Image (cartoon, rainbow, N blue to C red; front, top):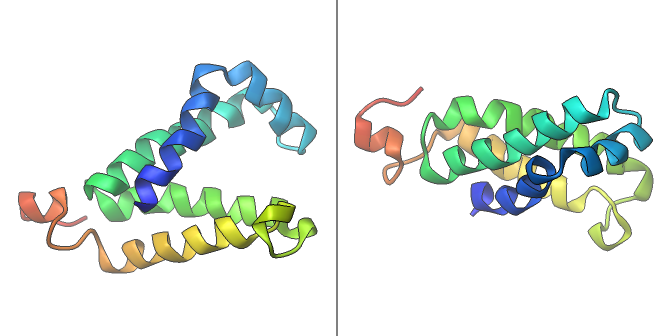
Length: 117
């Protein structure tokens, strides 16, 4: 669920990176086009890897970095997500941190392959 919840946030950034680039540049992340593609790829591909439990711990690192950066952006809006606060990225950062520490678990692709990274 954690991985799949990231995918719909990422694919619009990859489908129309120029539109997303404007948001990133307004937010102080330049060059915006680079950040749109990097964040979109992290959300889509990292999210799918996390959902499948494929290279789970490695997938968690860029996702966690993205979520912690999102927290710093949303910090000025307070806690509640309905006011653009940190609630949503903080919650998912905690969930992703769990997978970073514990891996994908027994139903992951990593477990099926017999190797967790």
